[in-house]
Length: 100
Image 1 (cartoon, rainbow, N blue to C red):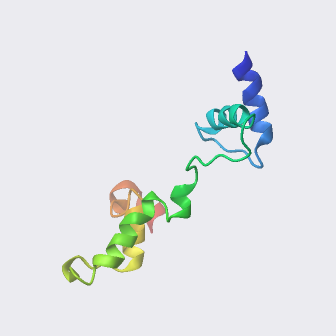
Image 2 (spheres, rainbow, N blue to C red):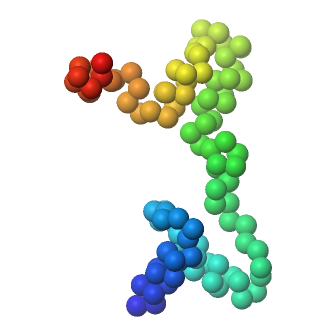
């Protein structure tokens, strides 16, 4: 019952709707920790601050492409391979009406 009430409080505390599984646990952590401290560092959003997990292949490609020119790709191709899981399979997946 307490979790149901706290879930509603946690949702109301958000600026925007956000569907992350750690929202309620972090809210509960804050509720408990705030009794003794004003600040908590938990690493949440650190990935975005430091370029994110999905950006690491792009960063690595940019660093190493000059040492291994046989693997050199342009930025657009590297971006699409990193962020779009179906990149390269479009013609197999979509009908010609959608793809063209």
